[in-house]
Length: 609
Image 1: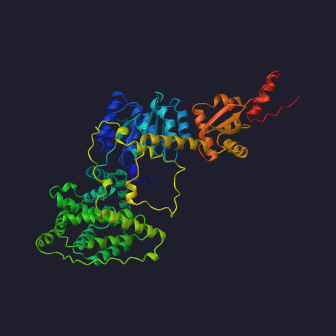
Image 2: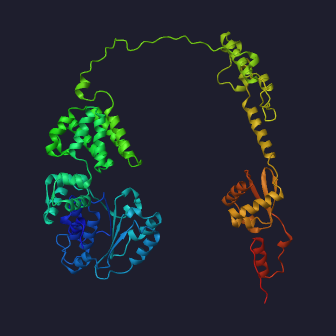
């Protein structure tokens, strides 16, 4: 059976893993010193070697004769693990086994000792897909597993893993594979497969894979199916990427504002089955190279362009200013964000090209050649236009509210134009010291003539009530502090008197609803009566559990539930009500039990024998 290249050439030892020396060196030292941990967490982007290192570590801890911290690949344990015949190495896909029942089954299995290996190793891939309950079920086992068990967790989204899980593991962060390391590995694989692979093509595949070795080997697999001699053009054809010549053509036509040429070239690429999203993405990389070439021309390692393209890149960069390159990058990023949300991708890309081609001169030379506008030159002229005042409507056509508003405005204008009245002038200096009490500073008549304002004295809020004029508002007497306290006390007393009575029918319906909210409280309220007293709702009941147990915080909770059922806030107090049924003297213990159950609303069937 044919094996994909990324499976066929998966590393078997730590020395075969590329671009992760900071991790493989640590793991090898732990194997050599016998200090391997009980739980590991491998994080990083796709194709960087997380699952590969997990399998190598599982072999290394069980290898009978490890070589410099790596498995020997020759002993019986290594062969069993590589063949997949051992049951002591368990690989679990958390994406499909993410429930709490799966973790409970795993937790039950860890108690069993290994069959043939020294350690039972659990490799949980995509661990961030576990549910919250599954994570909680795994916590204790992950923190203190049996001595013969080790856990290796792998994830691409570390932020979704709870801190309680990551804190119990040794965390290793995998970096993206370097382009040079990836290209060397691709050349080695192509040589083993008997395929001719050019170095430029290998570097191009490494850039397309975005630091993932598995993606790079998958692209190489497709290219081998197309041709045994792989060039950059072969890679572009197999990966569906636009030719670099097209990207330079796009860049030059945008600089020359050739909108028709851009749309025509986009149409030709679309007819050739080129993906519009890939074209936009590649063009973003092209403008990124232009931006870096303009800002850091000496650092060629930052560019994704090949060395033989530096001359053409320099020629195109001279046609742009850095401001316009940034504008084009912004437009391309906006297009890339929305291209996956619409069906007409080609139309959205055409709109982006039109926006990039529009605007002022974009070259640095044309921008510098513009003559500055002198400061003294008139840029625009201000013309004063007389504003016509709108004609006022006759008083006869105005409504009652409009007439009152107009009268108030006229009165305010007259007051503003008139001299300041004596009541608003600065008061004359008196001999009363600043530290004198308020009662000494104010005349007694001012306090006696200002009765406290109450709700009963409030005028009706209708349109016929006249609006006070500013002069009247100035003469309003000041209400002393003590009078305000009396107003508050009187208002409070009236509020307590206005609590309405609850009828027996309303209370019976409320008790029925209470049973739906709280079954125990509803059962205890059965047969109770209510009345209002001193602003409280007094519940009288012969149920001893209600009277003796519903106190403190429990009473506050019951008050909240009763207020929710009645539809208005109430304060509740509970009183015991004597009942003839309370006299249980002379009754047997069974009869007393049955009476208590009936008071609680519990139906008991008694069978006589």
